[in-house]
Every structure is written in structure tokens, then in C-alpha cells.
Length: 438
Ligand SMILES: Cc1cc2nc3c(=O)[nH]c(=O)nc-3n(C[C@H](O)[C@H](O)[C@H](O)COP(=O)(O)OP(=O)(O)OC[C@H]3O[C@@H](n4cnc5c(N)ncnc54)[C@H](O)[C@@H]3O)c2cc1C
Image (cartoon, rainbow, N blue to C red; front, side, top):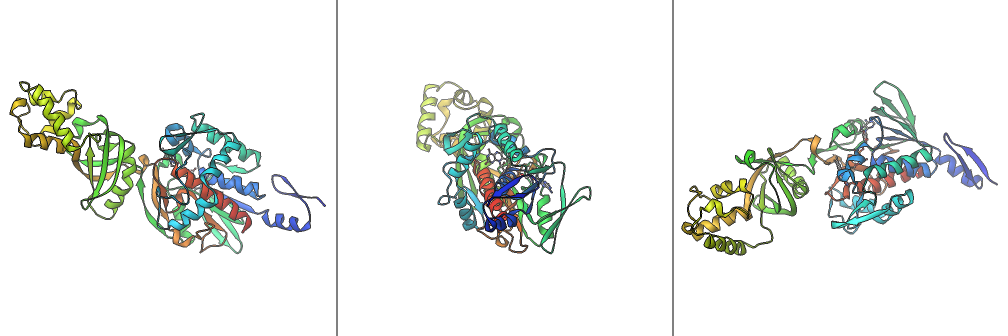
């Protein structure tokens, strides 16, 4: 016998009474607080399972952050990520991250978006982008699916309190309007880029329900350096290598385009290293940044190259001899840092020791890191809801039955390269599923 069960937004056909009971159990109101990547994924999965889903979003539309991702191109995942290889995701519970990525893999993500209409391409480093090169296309297909599934979306609705009363949750927005739900999925993001919606409000909601928050700090963010030269060298870009040193130990090294700025330093390798630097500062350590402006040359090769140039230009001033090798604005600074104060001395007068000192600066220039740019500039939040109180298979709260967390609000964050969105898709998928079946 086919039964039709009226859900708020759709008719669900079921085959017999037993299944009908299952579906009735699934016809629960699921409140999703936050319409970002994780929230939209959770909503789609829960609605496909037959639940009544409402997304509560404080901004005037869902998915604003997605539009800003990948410089407007949306680096939606990374083919190098798998549950066996989670090195680019950071958390105090790595097993939890593995469990979740196993349940909704990178391949599942690519298929999910292909079915919605997003053809994909893989770029350097395994980064996956939509073929259209438009982040807006990713948001368009998600919103289309949300509409198609009849998911209710309440925008300009900031949830300011969540309480559990018996088996139900009571949510209240900024105007005092109350909403009821059987399950709550909290996906309010972290604190990074608050102009796109995520301002840390979810931490307060979670704390009011008994959860602890691991102190958040900005990651994937530009670094502030201590240096008297920044005003002169700001705007200079070069392909180089950067490493983070903490207690003289090199923690991590990255190559790519590096940019000096008025406050310090930026560029993809710096963003990638920033987590280790900011974490060290949080622990009151004194991290250093080491810059190698000639990563393709060893020290000896660079000494040989410079010696050769000086021998050709023996009757020219030393500072002039570096024109064509390094940015002109950099020359006096590099020479002074190398302890050479007569910048215009003749090349023939330069000693081997001085050449070695110059090479030391060009390859091992060290700066003290004094801080990072603000939340407004950071792309992701390290820290967040303490995962020790979260079930590592289902992402349900161990403290409050029926409450789930996913995405950046949790103490899980990733490197640059599609890892953060993959975490949002995988964890969103798991909670969307679990909230309908548990
Ligand atoms: C500029 C930029 C570029 C990025 N590029 C990439 C990239 O290319 N690839 C990648 O993998 N990652 C990228 N990231 C990181 C990635 O976008 C995030 O990690 C991911 O979007 C997090 O998803 P989320 O759903 O957990 O949180 P969010 O996307 O932050 O969504 C949270 C939502 O909750 C809403 N909200 C917050 N509080 C409340 C409340 N109390 N009531 C109702 N609604 C609320 C917010 O308005 C927001 O819409 C980038 C981030 C930034 C800022």
C-alpha cells in the first residue's frame, strides 16, 4: 500500500505501514543555525531524508562566504585529502576528523556537485575548482537544490538563544521571536571574516548548553613583523621560501609568492604558515620567520653567482652591481643587514666574508613575528567547540541529545587548498544524516 504523508513542504510516498512509521519518525523539525557551506549541505541531506528543515541565517542571504572563497573561484576541495591523509586538517581529535571524512569523501563531494551541475577541474596541488571559475555557481546550485527540496530559509534571523525543554529545542531570534525544533544543527562558523556573517556568536550559544570552547585564534592570515625597513620594502613581491622557527626549530616551510607589506608580510606561503606562528604567540613563544629569496640556489651557488657578478663589475659601486638581481629598493637594506655600510664601495674591494654575509641575508633573512592581522583578514578560525564533548562518529553533542555541530565552529581547521570547505561538506553531510536518523 502506498501512503502519502503530509510534511510541511512536500508529500512523501512510502510503501507500507512499517516504513511509514520510519518516515513519521523522520518528519522532525530540524533547525539549522547558520546558512554557510556546512549548513546548506546539512539542510540538503536532512531534507532529502524527509525531514522538515529550516535554515536560520543572520545575514540577508545564505552562503555569503562561499562567494569570497578561492578569490571568487571557490576552491571547493582537494584531491590529496582522504581519511588516510588528513595532514592538512588540524584538530585535537584527529580520529574524529578521519571518521567524518570517511563518511563523505572528496570523491563523494565531487559527485555531489557534479550531480548538482558543477563540472570540476583539478589545479596545482590537487585543488579542485568549478570549471566555470565562479564561486557564485557553487552557491547558485546549492540554493537551487534548497528551493527544490522546499527547505525554509529565514534570513536576517540571528538566533540569540537555544534552550532544551524536554525533547524539544526552543530558539529565540534578535526580535524575541521563538521557534521550536526537534533537532538543532549548529553551523555558525568561526570568527574569521565577520563581515561575511560568522562572528563567533555560535560559541556563546554552545556555552549556554554546557559546551567548552578551545580559545579561537585567526589562521590563514597575514603576519606582522618587527622590522625598521617595512615602509621601504612594502609592495615588493618575489617567489621565495618562508619557514617558521620556534625555539630555533623549523616547524614548517612553504614556497610561493611572498609580499612585503606596511605591517609585515603576506602571500600564499605566509597564510599557510600563519597557524603555527599565531599558535606559538598564543603560547607566549617568540616565533621567527625566515625568508629565502633564492630557494633554487644553495648558499654556495649563490656565493659563486655573486662573486662572478662582482668580478665582471669590479670597477662599479657594490650597490649598483645588484641591479638586475634583486629589487632595487631592497639593495641598500640587504647590504646594511649584511653589515656593509659603504654601499658604494667598489666591487673589487668586497671581501669573501662580506659576500657570504650578503648571501646569508638573501637566503636566511630572519624577522621576529609580533602578531597577525585581525579576524577581518583571516580566512579560517583555529580552535572552537571542544571536540572532546562531541561524538566522533555522529558529531552529536555528548551533553545535549539532539544537538549537532559541523563546519568551522568545531575545533577543526585546515590549510589553504580546499581543505576547509571539504571539512564543511563532510561534517555537514554527517550531521544532516544523523539528525534525521538518530
Ligand atoms: C576570504 C575567504 C576565502 C576562503 N577560501 C576558501 C577556499 O577557497 N577553499 C576552502 O576550502 N576554504 C576557504 N575558506 C574557508 C571556508 O570558506 C570556511 O571554512 C567555510 O565556509 C566554513 O563553513 P561553515 O558553514 O562552517 O561556516 P560559514 O561559512 O562561516 O557559515 C556560517 C553561517 O552562519 C551564520 N551565522 C552565524 N551566527 C549565526 C546566528 N547566531 N544565527 C544565524 N546565523 C548565524 C553566518 O552568517 C554564516 O552564514 C575561505 C574563507 C574566507 C574568509
